[in-house]
Amino acid sequence: VIELGCHSGATSILLSNFRSLFEPYNNSREFHLFDTFTGFPENQSDTDLDQSLFSFELKDNYKEHLENVISSQNIIQSNSSRSTNIEVHAGDIKKTFPDFKEKNPHTLIALALVDLDQFSITKFAIENLESLLRPGSLVVFSGANCRNTPGVNKAIEGTFLKKYEKKKDLNLPYFGYIEIV
Image (cartoon, rainbow, N blue to C red; front, side):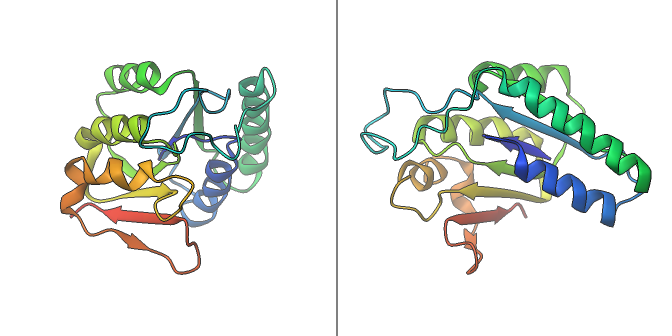
């Protein structure tokens, strides 16, 4: 599982809990969380809104806090099943994700969560995910149907994902997903 734009890490921790319930003996599932933890940049492309409604900046040293939460989570999971391997990659995704791919050529993605909200970085992420996806992989987008993040759909349409059907869950209006077939 790759989460690009993990913010506080809550989604992957929740999915890790589900993994411990539904795959209690599969400790090979890895979670890789990517974020700057510093929020949106001041300068945004003209494809995005002039100014975001929120900056999403977290407190200093948030990566260390998240790693402590993950460590606690592993202790809880070890009592009921095997713990999940969750790794946090802090920094600019344009540097951290290619570095991750180079160091982990074995990686195949079952689930990619893309919550980057802005056009250029979302397009970059999609282009860099392509070689890691296989039939059955799911790519989930936050902001795919949201007036505050118009760059997300534009990024999808500008990549290889445009050939796939975009789907959405009626219960989650700002989320869309694509299944690789």
